[in-house]
Length: 160
Image (cartoon, rainbow, N blue to C red):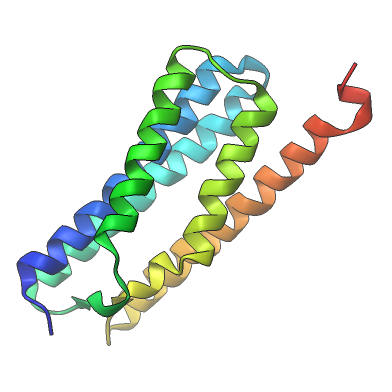
């Protein structure tokens, strides 16, 4: 098992990724008023994910859960956070199109699922297993919602 401090660092990076993603989605909501509610809802859910991960960190501090760091890449998460921060700066400067914003959101949600980000956590407690399952299910729902919004945005009738 890895030291608690290292585990908490991993959780901090995961929570930071969720929080900055929430900030990005909120910025998209400001930028694309027609999709404001859509992006604000996603932002709120990403911030809730950050809170869930922070609560998980409390369990690690208490010794009732641990993080399986063998599957954890701090460099990968740091790179992802920095890339999202760059997209956030562009969104705040009103750069890019709605389609580009939706492609970015889809990329983020897919990378969370395909990167098995929620599988780096391990716990014997049913409450924590359920929290992680919920995070993964929420992310899959986000991916479906973004795909649908992207399909609607890129249909030929919207390209006029």
